[in-house]
Image 1 (cartoon, rainbow, N blue to C red):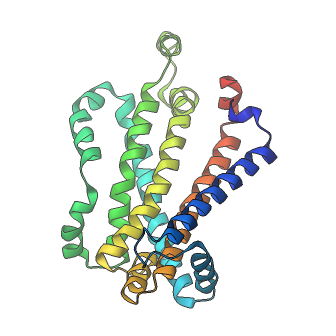
Image 2: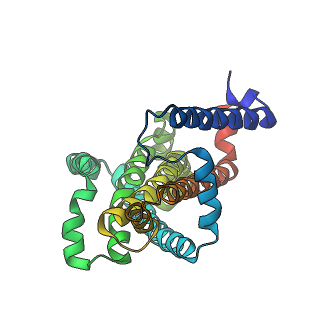
Image 3: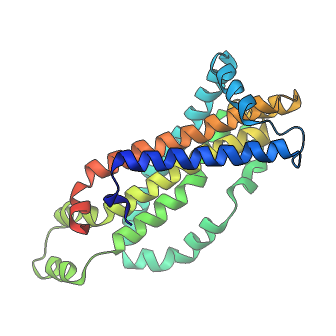
Length: 258
């Protein structure tokens, strides 16, 4: 059954049931005693979530994580779209850079952290650079694929009628690439939050990741899980907002698919 055939109310009910089932399994595993004692139960995590909401350290850390993640993501999105459109629409560049792009997207960006820390220090600027490098590849690759995906009939029409480059870009290339660009931007938004938190855990740069480490050192595992919950919730909320924006801006694409 396709999602489009399910009513929104039923869809949300199914999602809530799935979450409740997962939490129930978690609590059963904790009650069985098979997991380490440091792993908190569901009740303790929910209590810690309420406690975290009243802490200034939590809001300060969340703000710093969002600042670094969103800044790096925006830089990567702009650079990835511009470079991807140029590379994907020029066959010579597409062929000559394919090996570099394949290598770049396979390279573990976090392995560059010691070099970036040595150059910039363990601060927000360093975090932005690492996030931008991590988010660049999904946007760049999706944009290149989008720039390539032109139907043969459309390409022939453009060539026969000698449509000017700017008109070709705004009326042919960009509309054709937008769906894949939107997918790359949405995927990279989730990567931005994950990488930002990971960088903060490893480098102890200010943010949610550092707060998670501090809570682990203080044996407050419930608060550590609460901070992890908020990190995941933030990534999910950003992806949901982007999905809603994509649905509105690319309504024509959905109608054509139907």
